[in-house]
Image (cartoon, rainbow, N blue to C red):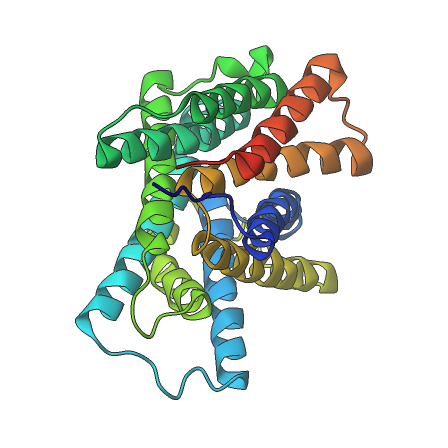
Length: 305
């Protein structure tokens, strides 16, 4: 019996790594946008998905991709599911942040994604995850804990149990997005999935602006050049380009590899904060970063049956 390797191609690997790094820059851009424009977290999420979808639709128009849009049930169902999962991922994450803390919400959400994907693969294949997959996931979880855990932020004023539940729901939504969008649908390429998935997600999240606090602060939204530049960057780079790269890389990668690549998001954000904002990661943080890099790199070179 011949065997094949499930190792991702170089192009797929590059796409997934690019997505993880670009998502990491989105954390810093979103935080700066919220501070300078006095936006709530829900408003930043809506802005991110809406602008990301708009940029992707614009790119579709420039490349002629809007001329022959698929109108099949499978295509419509895929776009709706992608939009719902993107909205759930964002909404549950920000709910977890409000109930716990940024560190706890990030660690639980991002860390649970490869676990959910590995468990789903085990159920689908009717066998436990391979030792290499288990080792990669455990190293990733330990590295993420060392990188993001802050004991001073662990005790929040909200319901911690409910917050962790929201973070797990967020992670499960992203894991489901990874598993669902990996299967091809006729007429839907990564750019179309990105464009209309983000648009649907933004529409679904819009009611949060009405239910939550005033999204633009007490006064008029200060539309300065810095705010516009941050908003454009947030929509174009860590949203449109990042999700496009992620969906493109999914086509020729194992789902658990894609899920582990998402761990590059908090790693990139932490390194940028250390380099640009002067934040000290400490010995534990740098050890966690090294473990994350090792876990992600190991998942790419591991052969599978």
